Amino acid sequence: MSTIIERLRDGKLVRVMHFTGLSSPKLVEVAGVLGDFHGLWIDQEHTAIPHAQLELMLMACRAVGLDAFARVPPTDYATIMRPMEAGCSGVMIAQVRTLDEVKQSVAWAKYPPQGVRGMFGATIEAGYGTIEMRAHAENANRERWVAIQIETAEAVEIIDQIAAVDGVDHLFVGPADLSVNLGVPGEYMHPKCIAALERIAAASNNAGKSWGILSKDPEHVRMCRALGCQLFSIFGDLECFRAGLKALEERFADIMD
Image (cartoon, rainbow, N blue to C red):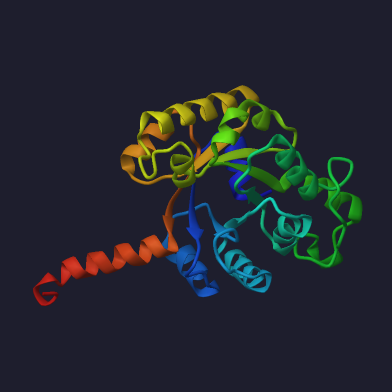
C-alpha cells in the first residue's frame, strides 16, 4: 500500500513536494536524499512532462523510497489511467466543476465492477506480469487512490456530493485557482477563501475522507491544520530553487551590489 494513502487513512499528517517545470529524475533523487517528505506529486496539468519522463521520475522515486502521485486534467481515459500503470500510487484530478466529471474520472481509474479501466499486466504496477490478474485488479481498486482537486467555485458548491462519491479518496485544495474563482486572486486568507475551506473541511469530515492543500505560508498551514487538513504540499521545485538563490544572495550580500 502507498505510504501516502496509508497515512491518510490512519489519520496521520502527510508532507509532499511538488514537481513542475524543473522536473527531472535527478531532482527527484536529490529530494529523496535531502528532503523529509512522505512523497511527491508530479504536475502533468500545467507542465510539458510527457509519459516517458514521468516513468523515469517514478523510477527515481522508487530508488529513494518516495511515494508519488500525478496531477492530471479530467480530459480522457488514458491521461488518468497511465500514471498508475507507470507506478503512481494515485492521481489527482484538476479543474473539476461537475459531479459527472468526478464520477467519470473515478470510473477511468478503477477496474470493473467499480469502473471501466482496461487490464494490462506488463507494468510495474502489476509486477510486470507476475501478479495474478484477479489479485492485481483487487489490489489496484483498493490501493490506487483518487484525489479530486477543489479549485473552482462550482466544485465548492457541490462539495458534499463530491466527497460522498464512492471511489473518491481525498480532496485537495488548489488555493491559487480557488482564490481567482472566488474573485480575490492571491488573497488566500480572504474570508471567501476561508469560508470555502471550512465547507471543504466539513464535507470531508462528514464523508470520512481526508483533504489536503498546497499551502502558501506558515499562517496558512496553521489555519488549514486547525480545520483538519492532513496533506500539505509546501515545497516545489521552482520554489526551492528561488529560495536557494535568495538565501545565497543574502549570504553573499557584500558582493551582490
